[in-house]
Amino acid sequence: LRSSRKLLLLIPGPKCTSWIYGNMLELLLSKEYGEHEFQWQETHGQVYSIKGCFGETRLMVSDPATVKYVLNTGFFAFGPAHEKVGNMLFGHGNVFVARGDHHRRLRNMMNPSFSSKNVRALLPILREIGGKLGDCWDALASPGYVDITRTLNDAALDAMGDAIFEHSFNALAGKSELATMHREMVDLVSSPTEVMQLVDAVLAFIPNSVFRLACDLPIPGLLQLIQKYKKITDALSFDWVAEKRGNDGSGATDFLSSLGDVPDEELGIHLRTILIAGQETMGGTLSWAFYKLAQMQEFQRELRQEIQHERLKGQPDYNNMPLLNALINEVLRMYCGFPLSERVATEDCILPLSQALTTTTGIQISEIPIKKGQCLYVAIAAYHRLESIWGPDAGEFKPSRWLEKDLCKGPALGPHASLLTFFGGPGVCIGWRFAILELQVFLVELVGRFSLSLPEDDSVRPRLATTLVPETSDGGRRIPMRIEKVVT
Ligand code: HEM
Image (tube, rainbow, N blue to C red; front, side, top):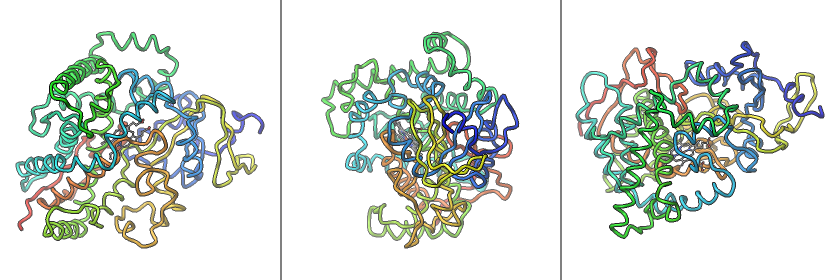
């Protein structure tokens, strides 16, 4: 067991049926996210091995001690393929891909804009967007079934525009070229296919210089769309700077002034990173919250009563609404925007385990030495289904668990409710407070105004397309729902 590579081969895991794809198709392309993965975790435990493309051994990790180590030691980063795609999409120097001192410097600049005080100050803006979203639903409300996901993605974009960039995208009003491009681009980048898995595996071996040159070629399709998107967002960031310089924009919540040291030509990179990181995850999480409410009619009625009761007192005090927050926490637990996160070791290290693991040769080990370059997945969604942490009903969607006095939950790995949804450590989601406030505001606004129900033949399932997206049985990215105005 002296060689860590040999030891990895002895760590139990699911059977591999294809040398080319390893277990990647079952992990990433299953019709319903987790179909295989959650079963693997039940069979093999909190740390097990799977095969990547071309026979590579990877680790799946949901052991809290191991996860904590991966999040906090600084020995892990995105792998070369993710790094290339991140740089292609956002631009070089983005906070997602940055590491070490560069990452720390960027976060130190950006974090204050997302502090609890500054996010609270954005409440009136979020309420206004929530109101506009409600007006859109007014127009959609009908006895038939309509897709709600598009309006929620647009509202997420408008919320970020108005609150963070002080710029109206007007996506809800259907007037945003950016929203349309965003949709096209995200659809293209995140359409999961077998070929994409191979491209991902091969990408790691393409030198950065060659990849950079290729990205500038006028290749129709995705590359051209990304180039156009970059042009639009760069132009937007220049307008933004010019506008701010005209008024002395130095307010504490002003995201631009927090980037004071960043050269103007790099601002587009941060604008794109925040927009892309914040919109898809947010639109998806909102969609799942409304979907689950439409499924749980009784809970929906109770939540509406809580909202009406709170409104009698004036503006709702969102943190004092147990059903609202129980729903949000349960959605964040069961439908986390990024259900797994890939990391690669940047140096040789030893992974701690909270529970000893038995190798295929019957030897007990309490830690796993790994080599620089070893790939692993932080299995976020699977962690949220561990019975040892969340109790015997861990696999059930059950908001009421958050109302129990003795709620089962594990160590505080992430920033909110012991969940890993927003990741943790130095790379923790920058927008987590903003995300929770937006969920609270939009849910209160819309559940107060509309009742929601699903068709009898509802076939929506969670599917991985970079983020967790809803998909119907015909492959459509939508949630058909009946929206009816509530008579008060
Ligand atoms: C419910 C909604 C959201 C979820 C589930 C979510 C989840 C996450 C996760 C899991 C990560 C870490 C990804 C990784 O390193 O593998 C992350 C990072 C990030 N998120 Fe979020 N996010 C949400 C909303 C937002 C919003 C609203 C914003 C911006 C306003 C945002 C901005 C970012 C940024 C900039 C990072 C990169 C942080 C870094 O690497 O230092 N997110 N998010």
